[in-house]
Amino acid sequence: MTGTRTITFGGEITVPAIGQGTWYMGEDPGAFDAEVRALRTGVDLGMTLIDTAEMYGEGGAERVVGEAVAGRRDEVVIVSKVYPHNAGLGSAKAACERSLDRLGTDYIDVYLLHWRGGVPLAETVQALQGLVDEGKIRRWGVSNLDTDDMAELWSLPGGSECVTDQVLYHAASRGADYDLLPWCRERGLPVMAYCPLAQAGRLRGDLLRSPALTGIAADRGITPAQVALAWAIRDGNVAAIPKAVQEAHVRENAAALEVGLTPAELAAIDEAFPPPRRREPLDIV
Image (cartoon, rainbow, N blue to C red; front, side, top):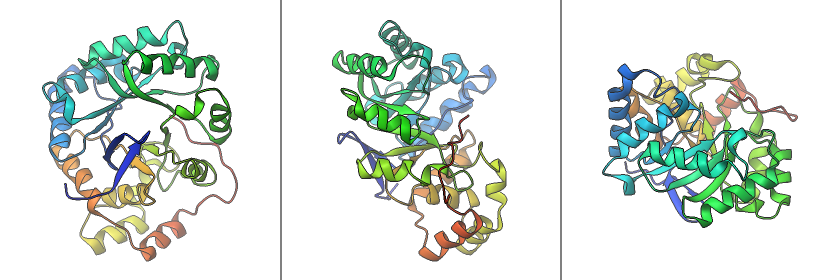
């Protein structure tokens, strides 16, 4: 992979702007080997950021990741996520240790609060920072937090140690464009886009069938999925984490890092999928 577009978490963890997601992996034992191969292929192609969560397959996806990175842990950056109900002082350490065991590693690079639940943010910050201090995680972040939640987080002691916010984001689901992405950009906080190929959210799969994307793809000799990924990472502060199991899709995703959309192409996508003119709630799945 020759593209130079990267994202850096916390000033120290740098990865290519397209990584690999694992949502729905680890649920079918018959697919385990294929999922492992897909992740390994992605790493071979330079997609060294792998995102997972204790929720995915109730730990199954973490086991897939663990097998995929066995013997090459130093080549990858692992992001995992803790359930909200496990994000307290009395539970985060145990949840993290279970994830570490499934991943077959002694540290997680970036550990995220999966979404906001009943545990106070201040307690979660304290718990996550404690995991950093113990060396179980390198850095921590959040997922599915909107602008007001992020502002609250930033006001807490240690809250600005957060290194990313992971949200659902694609051209047909771009509520984050109104104020969350600008808020994060102002603070040098990169965002991770999950479901960047419109696997969920507004319009869902219709995005890849839209004339705007299919037209650009046809003109370029690439796929609509590659257009969608190039759009997601266009501003330099977003990393996209598409999930793929078929080798062709893995290679397609990796090659998208080389695609830079022109102003005219971006304008065509904006016309088809206008940016929000007022605050909209984030799509969450």
